[in-house]
Length: 326
Image: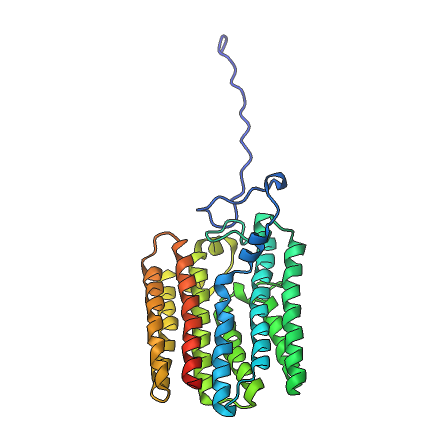
């Protein structure tokens, strides 16, 4: 029609891809010019100090159980067991930072930012840190093997290193398929505690087994608190943790069970070792952690629950050690 202005053809805007990670939190800047290099404090934070008490607990319990058999404190071997356990824990934390970072799983976190995902450190640097601590654990473990002449421990150590790496590393990490809690129970509960007892006493009394179960359950509880905090982010990123698979409410029940069951073990042990009754004092930290898990509104509150559960673990181990040697 004459006099009617022709309409301009509008080109549709390009469709934006949905961001990976937790949609509730803005992701870090991708422009490397806006990211400051990691400081010493950032590296220390990346070691995840809140999780390190989990590495101390099995050494305390295992050493106490060993002293029931030999009535002697092999402090050098115990110290090297502690070096192995702590170094493995730090190595796992850096390895997770590296593996989750290069996959994009940690791009949008609810909890503290990671070095790789935040671009504060290069993936190579974070991987090097992980390998460094794995190396420290390997050297300390080799020293224990030479001292005890238990050469089969080399194979056990190799399996521990493989399990540590493939939690989030490799093409099919087991932590992405709901198996994290199982492996944590086995290695940070049974293997760490019973291994500590064996290299000092060459025997595995039933007290070591009971303590190993308690340590393993508390380590699993810490992992559940961590995964509950990250559940939304993990769902989007395709990380199928046990928490993602079963949902929030079953995770809360499982967390409560994992935290409280070790105290049932302690009550049983208290029938034979009265000082073990003092482990019930640790409920002052355990019960608030359970309360937070059931009532939290902001996922960041679960960082406190994680810390309290980790504190519960090491205090639990300390009281059992006292009960066994007292």
